[in-house]
Structures are given as structure tokens and as C-alpha cells.
Image (tube, rainbow, N blue to C red; front, top):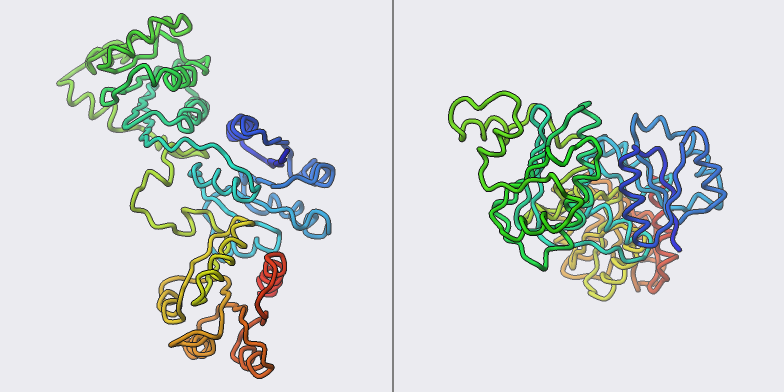
Length: 414
């Protein structure tokens, strides 16, 4: 069984991860960085460490230093979740075994994908398209669901509701679940049950203060058929919802009240550790360093497709994606727009050779640590590459372990 050590986690974040990972047959243990994190690390030797930075990076410095000095624990990979920090500061974390740094609020589809890659185990993720938004106005939580019911987001909703109630110190919260544009039927019964269970799980929300806006007869029948949802009311009109929950009577048109009460919120309800929008919700988004959580940006430059695939698979074993280039000119063009922490490059390419690329980078003052990985075995080729600024030279073929070890050495050296 794979094991994860979770350090300094916010209680709600901790509960959410524990529920999700335990269901995936992954053992999770929790610790405090200042008290028992290192003891639990050396005692259990987990497959992955996840650290939730609730203050700043200085709070975990002592733990990271102890881990790095321990030859048995130093290679254990780390994922950190925290507030946005400068990229240079993130890069400094590589020396401690940090493979990913996720800015809060975390996009959990990418987060769990990274965990799956690092642990080399599949995590079940519901691919159902789903837009789930939560707004808070006064003491009313407005939850809107469109497109479909996604089990990951529904599970997360339970903890997001708890986070909002706790952070805003709500004593008598009310909730409006808006599903008026959602077509539901018998096949959605299991997901509907999970949805309503997630809502009523919070004891501060009375069932009589839960209103469901839906035009589907099945939803009405579903509520009536489950005694645990007694008190929950299904309505077909927003005016009924507003009149039944808002303490002060409606003034003006219903449309004005909808704009004021639902489409606006009096606080940033998306703040916090738990984001209801996943990265996959942005269909045309490019994977930037902040979005995919990568700490190390690696380029692979080789005109041989099998070598590119091999190197990509090699780095994916430690959760790092690579940008792949089939020619030196493609790589050069990209360096004008993106910084790389490391490049693995062949020197036998055409029309631009790897030597030409090294010369260009030197002329332009572009500093990228480069490992040459090539079939060229002549001493002159090695000397030329190193004299042009390459950090290391490896003759093909090499094992994945050897390549990763060399990459770590070069990164640490920089």
C-alpha cells in the first residue's frame, strides 16, 4: 500500500485528502513540521510528502534541512501547497526533493494527477464536465451546478461549504442549490445522493433552510423518496427561494434581487485552500507553470522520436512534464518565450546541430543547464560540447535511473 505523509495541513484540507486518498487505498498519515514530522518521516518512510504551507516557507525550513541531510529520506519526493511565491524561490526548493509547488486555491484535478504520477498508481477521477460555483451573500450560500454532476467536485463541495461557514463565522447559514439548467434522471440517482449528503453533512445547516431550484420532476421525487432529506424543499421559482430565505422582504423586482443576492457576493468566496473550479474547466488554457504545478521546467531536444518519448517517460516517473522539440530551431524559438531549468539535447541533428544551439545560447546570453545525450562518442565531440557550455555529456543509451541522477546533480549544481 502506498503511503503519504501530510504535514501542517489545514483541518478541512486534511479531511478532504484523507477521505479521497483512503478511498483510493492510499494510507495517509498527518504530522506537524515543528513537532513530529521528521520523526514520522524516518519512522514510516512514506512514498510521498505533501506539505500545506499555512504561514510561509520559513515554517518548514528545519524539517526540509533535516530531510536533506538524511541519506534514507533525502530522495522522498515532496509536493508543497502554498501562496504564490517568486519562481526563483520555488526553484530553490528542488534541492530538498520538491517536485511540485501548487498555488492556492489548488486545482484538484491537476493536483491528484500529479499524486498519481509520482506514486505510479491510478487515481479515479470523474471526467464528467461540471461547472460548480459557490457564492456567499449575507448568511446565504448560493450553490450553482451546470452541465453535469462530477463526483470529485461534489465531494469537495462538502468541505468548501464548511470552509465558508467557518471562515465567515456563520451561525445560521442557509443554502440555495440551483440546478434549473441541469437535466437529471434515474441514472443520476447515486450522484444526487452524494450531492445532498454533502450539503446536509454540515450540522449548522438546517434542512428547512435548504432550497433546491430545479424544474426536473425526478428531483422532487428523489427528495420525497429519501427520509433523510425531510425538510429540504424543491422549488421552481427564484422568487419563492428569495422570499423564503431572506430575512428582509423583497423590494423592487425579482431580477434586481437576483443580481444583488445571487450574482454578487459580499466576500471573495473562492478564496481559501479549496477551489471549486478545476484546471480542466478552462478548455483552451495552456499549461503554465502555475497551472500544472511543475517546479522544474525541462526541455528535450532530439530529432529521434523514440528518444524523445523515452526521456519524457523517464521524467514523468518523478512527476515532471517535458517540452519536446524535434529540432534545435524549434527549441531556440521557444527559449525566447520560456525559461527552462534543464535541457537534455542531442548534438547530432540537422539542419542545426546541438553544437549550433549551444553557440547560439552563449551568444544570446541565455543560461540553461544542458546535458548532452548523444551517440557521438568521439573525444572531440565531448570536449567541444563542454567548452560551449554543456554541463554534462552522456553517451546513448543510458538507463532512466542514470539520467535522472545526472539531472538532479546538474540541477543541484545550479
